[in-house]
Image 1 (cartoon, rainbow, N blue to C red):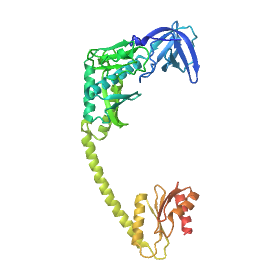
Image 2: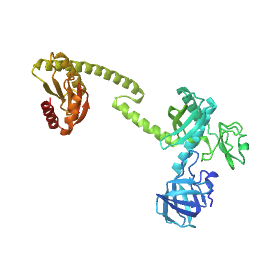
Image 3: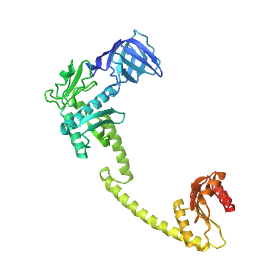
Image 4: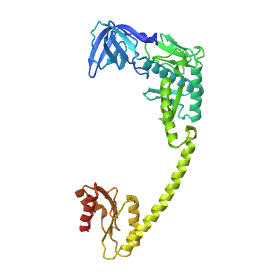
Length: 411
């Protein structure tokens, strides 16, 4: 059973009549096989087509195709719908053209960008993935990474090839040897069987790009519209480039510009002045952090002195609550207080009332970590620590205060 792949000869055909030759029910889907198809099946990094199939004489009997698979001879159209067809039915196939054309733009945009990098730097494309939100290619430069200047130059050259509206043509060869006589940027593997399709951009004698291709592509480079690189990062000694083309590049830019504008408005700035506004904000935050650190130190010193001044030699345990001092600052002031106290050191239990967090601080005489480990869970608390300090957090103030009473009785 074979399927004639009409899309290879006409990438712009949007509807086609065909005959159902098989229906295979699989787990989670049904595979519809026809004698011919315009649906490109996933391959070469390009995703399979989507669309619908309906009876030619009754368009109400219809299924949605969410993906397409090529077994080599037959093409299976995947659906999750109940299939109202039988083998032998005449059906009409209709592409989701927006999806198909976007894939054509993205697929051949990848060829153009790879060709530009090869022209400029002899960089070899060792990996290609077409994702939903971006495309990636892995460029091998013999261990070197592409610089920002190299990426910009490649992007410029690729877009110049688009704007030149170069003719894109397919050339079919019956052998790998004949195909490799073309000015390829990447030789065809001798393991390839059967006919080989080489696609050129521009004059075939001196093309902008020349590469083996099994996907769909536009007739002219201008239809790709635009190539935009988003970012690049190292990957296994190569440069992984994230980019997109055509409609998807436009949608990405539109969303990015919307976010940029919203952020700029929050800083009462225009997008072009946003970096200056952010720099001003960073400076203000740095100054505020410095002021906060100075104030926190002042408060810690004052509270530590207050604890020290209230201490009497008979005291073994001191409990205090704070509303506006963080647990970390409470811990610091606790150690400061112990240093100020002469003679025997008490166990300090200092609480952040807002978060129901208790800090135990000791000179080691009272094993803070053990106290939390042994008693906190009895009051719905959790935490831990060392001999000289520990932290416990509770669900309510009542639980915290009950824990305080319990450890006071156990020291």
